[in-house]
Amino acid sequence: MTIANLRDQIKIVFFDIDETLIMKFEDILPDTVLPAIRKLKQNGIIPAIATGRSRCSLPTKIKQLIAEEPIELFVTMNGQLAVFKDQTIEKHPIPTAKVQKLVDFFDAHNISYAFVSDDDVAVSEINPKQQSALDPILTDYIVDKDYFKHHEVFQLLPFYDESQDELVTNAGILDGLRVVRWDKDSVDLFDAEGSKARGIAAAIKKLGFQMENVMAFGDGLNDLEMLSTVGVGVAMGNAHEDLKKVANYVTDRIENDGIYNFLIKSNLISE
Image 1: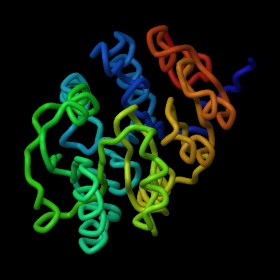
Image 2: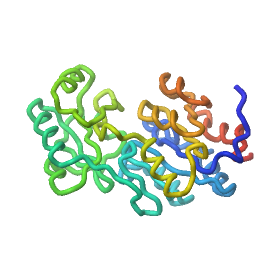
Image 3: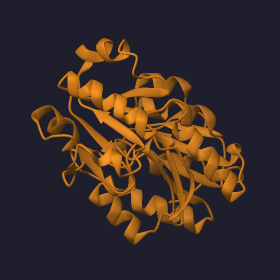
Image 4: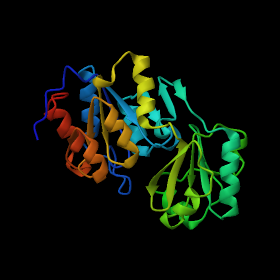
């Protein structure tokens, strides 16, 4: 695979988090991630985050990375919120009435769920299925079934496996919403027009860049739009096969320093 010299083209690089920057279940941040971020900044290239997580649920090691080498641009909750230097660029919360409809359905079918905002993750209850999906990501969530009545909610995480996909799909509750499975026991529910690509579009408009100036790394199905839209989309070697099909390039696996290696090969940083 021949990789072009992208130094003059790329002005900003977005990174997914789970299985792209950090190995989620092993809680391992490759040693080359911090040097990669630092070298990008030294070369005048902006590092940014594009994640399905909210800022409150970033892994501890990612928070430590940001504390050591600050990152100021975030597209979070699958593009529902874009923030630069703690100032909101664009946001797309789910209307409260729509959340109520979802909650009523899930309660009726004994499906637990979580509300996701920029500040909190609030679960309806604690149970094995919810813990199986959520605890590898964070454990400092709160329990509050009425959270949505008093706070903006950008995503719902209902906790059900694939055996109930058809039940939910046929329930008539998903109008204007998109479903992306991220765990065997949970899916993301968010605005149907939402994606990391939409959040990135808002962010780069604010910063005065064009999409051709953007590189992005990802591994999952919620990265499809992002890698299809940016100037240079890079799938991790451990990425979902469907994502590899739309990527411009496929790099090495996360445990084999895929990000660092690709940034060197594309001349965005040097060893």
